[in-house]
Image (cartoon, rainbow, N blue to C red; front, side, top):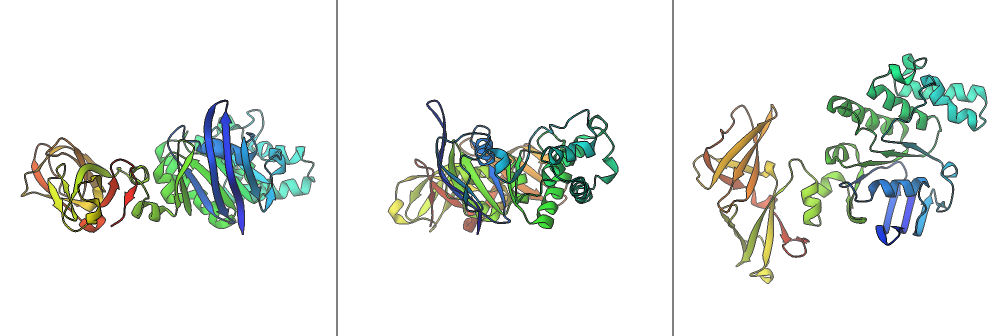
Length: 353
């Protein structure tokens, strides 16, 4: 059973098309991430699902009920925003219970829900504090708790961790994943951070300019992207791309200083292609002389060497172990041929060999 069904959804602001006939199915209990760069339409889509924006065309179903023109309060959702939006004059307990009091719930039920949410989010000791006395991570927990007490089946998160520092983002990312595993509710999460998307999602929707580029499990998008945009957006550092030409069932890639045999159909003979290889699928050859190491970025157990190739293209290579290649050294490279991805240089669509 699908928890949310979106059919031919479009949204225009005047003559500007923001969302373009989107179709999307979200299964019950699924953690779905809307991923894309700023301006791609991911937050706009979330606001349409929440009822905060009126759609231009199409339909939205929640639990098989057409809610396209329902008010937000009628849709059975809980939403967590990028800003904490807490009432500064209220305690944590007051913030958690305010919406329930307005809804007319009995006092005993309010107490029960606040207690349950505070235990799950480990904020029991903070209930009598006001937001000014809380850290950023604690405030975001309270914001999540305010959605949690509503006891709904669908939670919407609009970049909830973007205002936090790196350490807190990592900690709360784990907490949100645990929360989903514990509650098994449907969750839709908006982010521009592909690491967040890869670690949190059951399924990722990659958006660009109001269009869905690809939908799939994180590792499916990583291993089997449909086009160059998805291939470059998923993975950190991004996939390396160099220009190439299909020749005799192989590909000439001058930017890599290499020729790959037998990886493309002869039907593509003479066609311009883009050769994609991830940093972790390339190794350095100290005996080679095709590339120059411009700089090395060390992250402890892993580092990334930035190389300049024969035709000026820059290549990033992952290094592991204790040894690091020094800047200024000339090296060669080896690439796992089975990991190479090819894309049509004109359409940027994947060429599947």
